[in-house]
Image 1 (tube, rainbow, N blue to C red):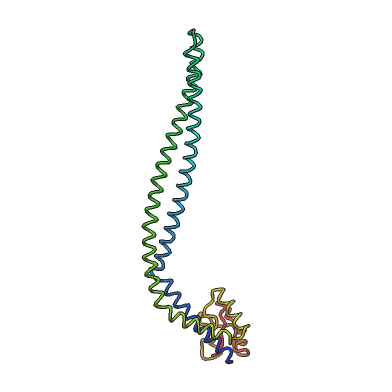
Image 2 (cartoon, rainbow, N blue to C red; image 1 turned 90 degrees about the vertical axis):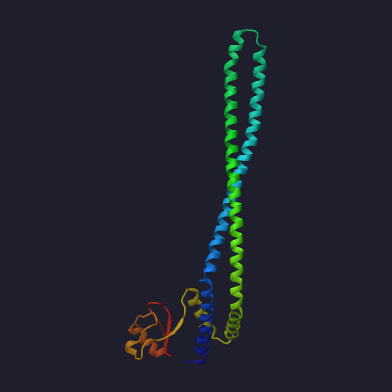
Length: 238
């Protein structure tokens, strides 16, 4: 085993320690609770924005309908004035259908206004519920985050020590070996380099539990390293 590869293994060891710290942190109940409360807050905010937008749309409709209602009432007053000024029963009778039509239009417009006002009231109530939910969830989020920050602060010295050691060691590593390591890690493989399992070539296997193929065994014997066909880890002779 070359000194260059020994340094790579040391770097990997530090990386795995840091990975363990991060995994323990992410598996904390408080971390999961924080993610849940964050999602609830975002859901409440989305619902608030949606309900407020719908209420504003109905509000604009109400304003338009009030203008329409005012115009209908003006037409009704004009026709009513003509009706009152009519001197014969025939003239009055001829105007009655038009008055009824205008009255019906006014009633329809009034119903639309009342309907939209009811919807605005309903959406306003929903907005108030959304605000209450946001406030409650925000308090839960802040309290949970404070606990997590405290936990994270306790692990920070160890985390910083590992990161500094990795940074210091990184400049001494073989660039091609480090590039390969980072590629494997980005593919979710960890650890990347693992010692062969077994005391003799016949029984050689990877830590994933699968025995190496004869081709792998030959490569391991000749180059001291091969890639497991099953888990893709790099197996080396210790």
